[in-house]
Length: 126
Image (cartoon, rainbow, N blue to C red; front, side, top):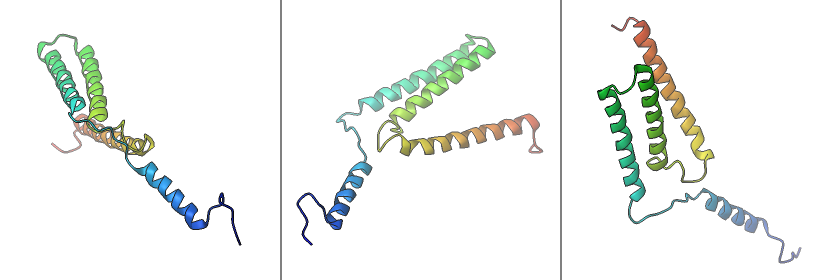
């Protein structure tokens, strides 16, 4: 059975699909000669850390406002570190990174929740 040039054999179609799948799965990273992004991320993390330290040591704000500002600084620092050092913006796509991120947030929430539980009710640990 002869086939025209536009038709593919099964092995040719398989090879083409395999090449397309491998090309999709290959990570796409932006390569730089000098790690300026990481240096700026590190400096930004230091600034956010020292800002929180300064606010706590000097008691600039009332307790509730101070807590809100420190939590805001912590979220900003977490987002900065996820974007710069954990390369959340790079790679195969956001779908590959959302499930592990949700799992990390769930584990962190569980750890914080259980720590608060132990501190509030002293669960016979002391």
